[in-house]
Amino acid sequence: MPGCVTQPSDADTHGRAEDVFRQAFTRGNRQMAARVEHQDEAQKVCSEYRNQPSNDVAQEIEKSQMATIRYPASGKLMGDWRAGEKIAQDGYGMRFTDPDTKRPNGGNCYACHQLSPQELSFGTIGPSLLGFGRQRGAGDATQRYAYGKIYNPQAFSACSNMPRFGHNGILTEQQITHLVALLLDPESPVNR
Image 1 (cartoon, rainbow, N blue to C red):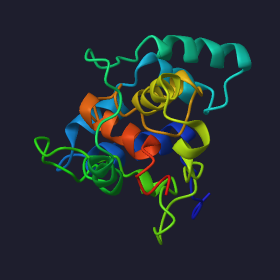
Image 2: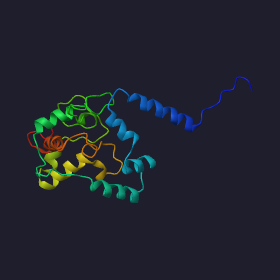
Image 3: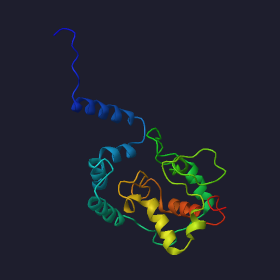
Image 4: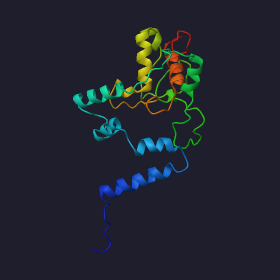
């Protein structure tokens, strides 16, 4: 019939979307592109379940991801909250257009969390962390939890939207200890 338009198949649409996605990384951060193109097992399962796995599958993910957490050999889990604040404010390395892989990455924590009452702009996809240390204390168990949650949040909440900062090599162990200090130190803006 003349003038009819053929609707592309879902496979065609998906293929075109994948091509656009890959092309977006040609000038940027190839390490980030590799993580997206070659998902690890946990991420594949989360994608398969559209981030809503059954309880049994979620427990399997959490168990497997808990085994990936690497705590610092020194045993020191709290660094300098001032360095943590800088990391929390810095989004470098999380965008596909950040090509300098030698520059330290930031955590861009304010994109998802409120950390300071003075902060005018913060995201709300994650919970507010105001008073985190004041409410929970800064004991060994809380330090271990905070470090692990930043290192690999899927160990605590399967298919979490939070980046797996340590697991994916986005942040170093030292950077994570600085973020733990930001969350727990009574002098940090989080707890004042």
